[in-house]
Length: 345
Ligand code: CP3
Image (cartoon, rainbow, N blue to C red):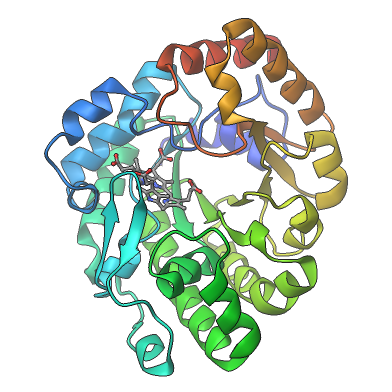
């Protein structure tokens, strides 16, 4: 391991230790907002790109080189481990993951076998290469959380109301728990592959869990997110837990066991710190759409995020969700510098 890594501002903030400046990275910092991404991706399907280590390394490095962000996020997708265990799915441009045969009965759930490291040699290869190339900059590995993965598998694709998902959750709880149990096992194995190959932190994306009420989170989701964070503890890397629309869930997410809780733009960070409770760092939470406004607006709103973030025991600056594809990369470059500058101590 690179000796400077442990002292990187990102890892210090995750561990709630003093930082030289507030660390910055952006969800979806690699991707369509970058011309250099569009260029290297031209003619290659998303899932093919994810299984090609040279491309994964190049795309992961692009925003690090361009912005000087404090962490890299591994270029992959939440459905890659499901594809790797044989689920017939694809990522359709402008749509997202689409599953050929939605999973709605016990037989389909039984086909979700555990993931072995040998299923994803290209992940081990890409992470190993990246940790060399990144030197003192941490690499964040990630996974989709069981609820969000379950939603794609049950609905067969992106969904607004998660009707089939909730129908199983409420109407067939036995099936629901069996599915969540299998997804938890797969997710843990997938995250361990990334940490074993050198990832310095792990983020669990529960993008769509904001669709459930706190009591349902507790009954139908918390047992699984808790099992994931407990299972990762022995790896000794910071664990980040993120979802969208989770204002009313922050309290119970705080119980799941992550070191850092990601917050979307709807809840100011000082309020989020109260909801999440003691012993956690926060990550977030500028509305990604603010980057579409003039720089003067971005600057003012970014300052407010940095100031509200001082209420947290540790703060990693990020957006409240992913970079929108129409974002001007120059805004992200200025934002990175600006946050570093105003938070320098
Ligand atoms: O820079 C990064 O953040 C790393 C890469 C990353 C991707 N997907 C690449 C990607 C990460 C962390 C993800 C996670 C992911 N994938 C999530 C959780 C994060 C979130 O945004 O809430 C979810 C819900 C998915 C499912 C998914 N995959 C969606 C919704 C889409 C977008 C569909 C579209 O075209 O608008 C994808 C495809 C995808 N994943 C792209 C990228 C760069 C776009 C592929 C392309 O270039 O065509």
